[in-house]
Image (cartoon, rainbow, N blue to C red; front, side, top):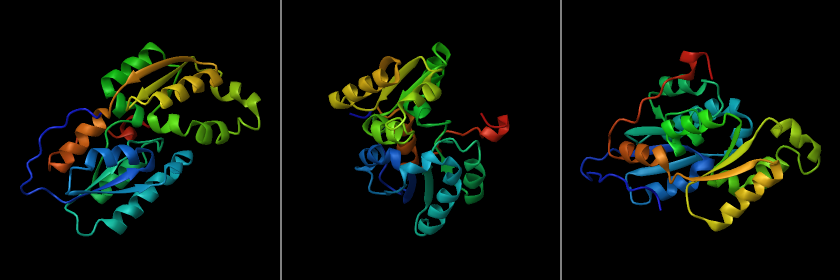
Length: 221
């Protein structure tokens, strides 16, 4: 179950459009099912294979769908765009999820920083990535056809951490198997929906979303 959300005053709620990453679709549906003032539109999760296309796709979806809404919120972190999503966010006058990627907002920024400090050579999975591991990692990287590429892609990793949004035994088995296939030490951390849950609740209630520090301020990271 997701973490408990704050009570929302039903009076004078803004009508909100969430433009989300397809990798968050299940989680966004779960978090907004009792929020009648919030609608969701998701972009294809495959954009993560070519993150340079995320800013333009987000801009197009905002402009095509924003009419009739009081507020538009972008349910993407930076997600590999190297800071290039933030100018779109600023130009369109909207907000996005804080953080560099879904691992950070699921784990929460302080906990994610601890995980990386503890072992920088960590490969992360979420429920979505565990569910789609064969399609996105094994087939997506060509490891089904060229298993010798495993060392090139993952030879510098030491650990796989499964950031679990739910207690799904089948996904836990899949994540553990993924670690074995990649030759990595396995750990599981239950995160629930982390900062995604609290941010969506705040946006639905008409409150400010947590501030985002643009990656461009640091020259990308």
